[in-house]
Image 1 (cartoon, rainbow, N blue to C red):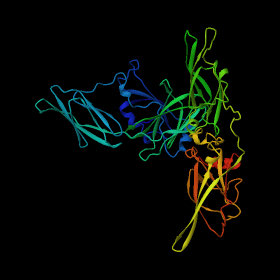
Image 2: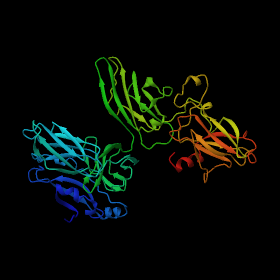
Image 3: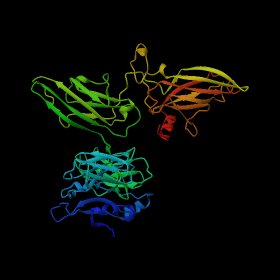
Image 4: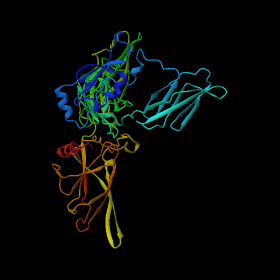
Length: 520
């Protein structure tokens, strides 16, 4: 059958074959499927109307792709559960098929007391009219055999063989790649069994949407979305025999805003509510602060995905400074507040849309110590020499004592530090650690094992100094102040290590060069 732009009636049994990319014109994108029937839309004839989008612009774009993708605005899985589905024929087996499992069902056979079902060397003896089998291989054909037995153990009915093929296994590592106010780009792990995928987008009301979707290999770019809106995105691999298992990810478009989840008030003057604060998904590195104005002071308040800075907040005025300065908090763009206020008959606190205001990207000088852009870090050194087949190797262990300068991120008020003045450690991405070998070691030292930090190459780095090595703490390493390295040196080129110094450099072109070059 020739497929062109426009509306084409297609029998449901043929859809799985005709959605094979080899059968579609290059540059064609399947965007919707709707049942059509003269009987008020019932699906008794299983005839669907498929709307194909085929424009010169899309054709030009698709030709540039290495792989052709089918964009399904509606997955065909489960279509047969619609009104008008044919009842299962008596004496036949049907199945709900997944990638590695199948659930077989059949109608009861008169006089049968139990059934024997055999599949791929597995057998089940059951009194029910269903049997489940696991441990199957994806995208593989199987045949199930079943017999019905009476109370005497005699076979009274042999079911026709049920042949089926398992579907493709679900994709892995589905994640967001880029998000703006009107678009979401997602990606997943590459696959060897297919390069064709279906994408379906729904809102939080489970309504099927039809945004623009562009597929390219293992990514999908979805545009035409609404700002600050949540979407459920379903992705499934597509094989020659149909759509595989579906994965789903819930994401929202970028933007800032406030939503009143609920509010309440009672006759005793107690009022409260729950507020969700949505900050921008793309924010600068470092701690992120916002100032929240409640319509009245809160007697009790609970915040999640952020902390309240009690020193900077004016709680008597209903003004709260929320801070995200932990790694896990920085990954949360949605902050929640649950609070209530206790008043009297003259006290009025109305929690409604527009009554809670937020000043995003709020910044105030911290009450804690503020460091200069370069902070010296003490080091402790232990050296040794080894002899192997007459060759002397000189080496040492250097501990970079961040713990003598900065708070322990995981326990900032620990007992060991309670009587000392420590500084707030700069956030991941805001600093690098420089190790200078000194005048007595112009040849530098060679780095062996490193812990708690990662060495970065200074080649081509703007502002990099000679005889200096640079290190960063990744997001995973940032909470730890236990950092150091094993080094080796040549006595002829490095007469003394006493001049070795380390410093923490906060901000500036070197820091930007390191963190803009790659994701660390």
